[in-house]
Image (cartoon, rainbow, N blue to C red; front, side):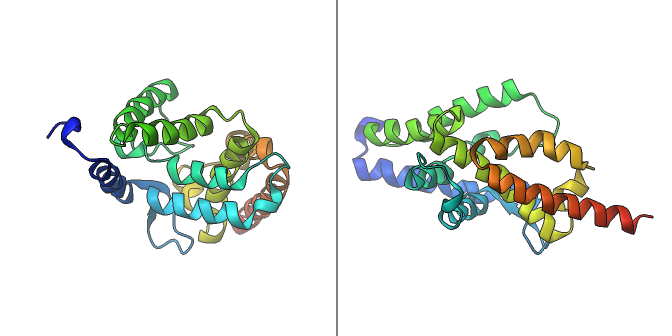
Amino acid sequence: MSDEGLSRLDRQVAFLNEACRLKSVLRGTTLCDGSRYENSAEHSWHLTLYALVLADHAGPEVEIDCVIKMLILHDLVEIDAGDNPIFGDFDQAAVAAQEQRAADRIFGLLPDDLRDELRAIWEEFEAAESPSAQFAKSLVRFQPPMQNLVSGGGSWTDYDVSEGQIAERVGSKIAIGAPGLWDYARGQISGFFRAQAAKNR
């Protein structure tokens, strides 16, 4: 059936059914208990909770309801593009192009007004220029270290990551939208690496 033959509700449900596929996209970060790798849908849900709970770390111009929308939508493109761990080796330009094609397809399932509204939210997040997008991006980078700390290293161990690499690739991004969260994370991360070094002496 062509799009012309679909009702508004048909298209809304088609999008929601497609979004279910995000539950099958595995990430490089484990659950806090280390029992298995999380999927991207779990990650997105967890981040919306981070936004609610850590809203007091947002700047005065941040709109938390907008941040929550960004976080629930931000990884939908991974249905087509997959997850690319921050410490992995991949072509960023190629991934960005793939994610744009994925956004065209996935948001294109929606009725035109919703397609444009949700795509604009996703694009705002990707651009990371507004205060809300910068805070959302900070949370995206803050959550995995918190899980790695409690799971005993998680993806840091998998990718043989140094404290300096975390500061460069993760810390710099957290600090843009939530400097207080990076101050906290930096202290926790330093403590973790000191403890690991002591174990290996």
